[in-house]
Length: 337
Ligand SMILES: [Zn+2]
Image (cartoon, rainbow, N blue to C red; front, side, top):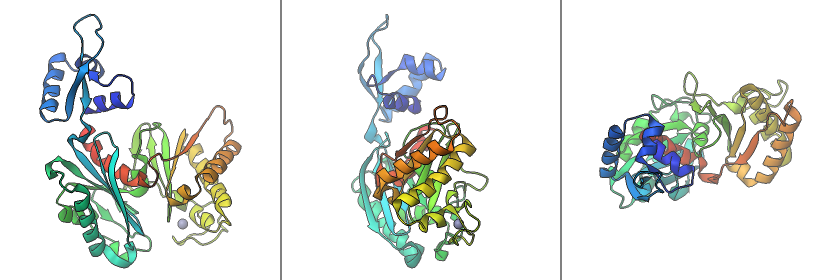
């Protein structure tokens, strides 16, 4: 029900949605809708927002989401920075902060203590019962279901850590974890067939296909940076040679790096028939115009019929907050279903 109200708000137009429209969209009876809506009004999640135009009968009362009725916390645990933000029910960040860390050097204890302090600052006077939970996006590999990290490249002290449970214990709030690139794809609504390509210290991709997030058999899908483009290429940190990530790192400048990324994205588009690529991560944000121009150019050259297969390439609208916002989106998704 909340999802329908949220979708109505996202679609613009009128300020809300009526009970009649909710019944039509959900297939539920008017009586059932009335009961559900009353409960959501009592909980403060919905509000009545005036009357819409009459369609013959009595004027319809419009319902809207109350954005600050509940909050979600989003965290990006990066290799050298920790980002925390607080998002409202519409998925908008209302406060954020970024602090430097050394993920590998400091180890879990110090980083998670700092995280607890930052979240406490972020929530300030907010009543904890109005906080739905905390979503933490982390470099992988990790198991999203069990909340355990697995051999994070270059950070051995985090291997086997139950990140979700350790963080939940310190935060005292329901906690979820997600791979950083997968979280990024949840940072904004978009095409049902899209990828979020995250270019930071590493290279990953989060996928939405047929409208659903794709995590794979071990919830570890999206190791986009380690597809081999040139078996004779430079050695990669993962131990193989000629990975996209290694070729990108060996590029002579942003233009050449963007072309390498474009080649890899063209492979992804052809394999999965995507129609939207969202770019994020520090490297992209440092030279967005170069990345956009070169990737669009490579796609036009590589796709057999670019006019029939148009692909939108854009930079994540939430910029450096995309991954943390997606992590908060994970928490909101539990409410909205
Ligand atoms: Zn590799």
